[in-house]
Image (cartoon, rainbow, N blue to C red):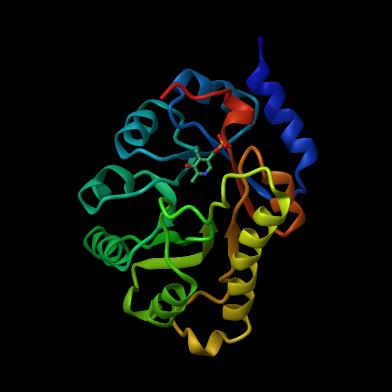
Length: 225
Ligand SMILES: *Cc1c(COP(=O)(O)O)cnc(C)c1O
């Protein structure tokens, strides 16, 4: 088990195309584990709980790029936004408005992804495709957020057909938006980053054109909730 984190990072770096960004999902793992991955050259990490992100960011190297990937309540923004390079999991208009307001008050522009509900499980978070089109069309109302793209989580299943179908929803919607950028005047010109793929489905994600994959278990082992 020694150096298993470093060797997992090394293997992934070899496997992933150079244009795919690896977010090492360190939630529920201690700062020491993050440091091991950092020493192996990893600089982008994903966290899903505000308190845990704030605590780790306070003690870990400043050149780490933190992606927030969990459900975010507006009363927790002040823990997350000062340290996060990106919030991948904006899943409601209410949250988008609050992030924009925080950005204005703190003279920042926050990079975000809109989370789309692509899985069949109803427990998972996210906008419908219609809601994303609606929000994207109003992007200019939120000058202190930069809507960079879309994020999603596929149904938890071993059925590749289902996973591909879920991921395809993200690709299709991104392509639809990109083909009609004049309808979305507030989006950045380079809108279109797609974040999808986790430990059990990242290979499919890469094949389908993910720009960001978020991998936890494969790097850090099982989580003890
Ligand atoms: C936990 C989590 C991941 C990583 O999952 P693994 O299966 O451990 O790779 C990716 N994305 C989100 C949104 C998560 O909450």
